[in-house]
Image 1 (spheres, rainbow, N blue to C red):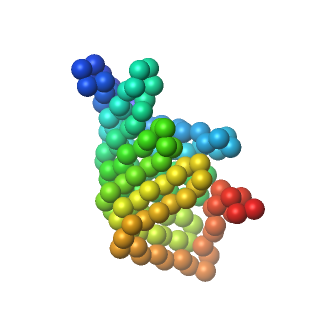
Image 2 (cartoon, rainbow, N blue to C red):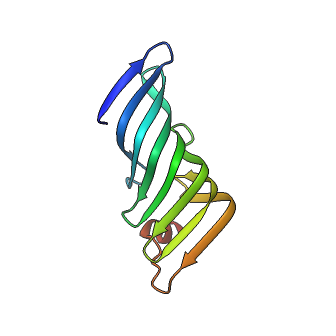
Length: 133
C-alpha cells in the first residue's frame, strides 16, 4: 500500500493504493489492486477486505475482473461485487451486475444483466482448462 492508518476502536486498517497477492491452495497467485481498502481485523488476522475504486483481480495473467467496489472474505475465500463487473481475457469480455467469485473452486457467478462477447480467437485461461481435467 502507498500508506495506511489503523483505527483501533473499529479494528479497521485503511490503506491507499492497495496491491495484494493471494495464494490459492494449488500455489497459483491472484493479484488484487484497488485505489483504497478497509481491512477488518479479527485478533491479529484480517477477516475481510472492502476494496474501493478501480478494483482489479488478475488470474493467471490471462483473465482480469474489474469493478469499482468489492468485498473479499478471507474465511470463505470469495469476492463479492454488488455493482457493474467486467471479466476480460484474450478474445472475450463478460459484463454483468452482482458478482460472486470463489478463488479456490474458480467459479464466477453474475446475478443479472449479463452480456458476453467471444471472438474466434478467444483463449480459455489455463486455470479454467486445468480445473476441468
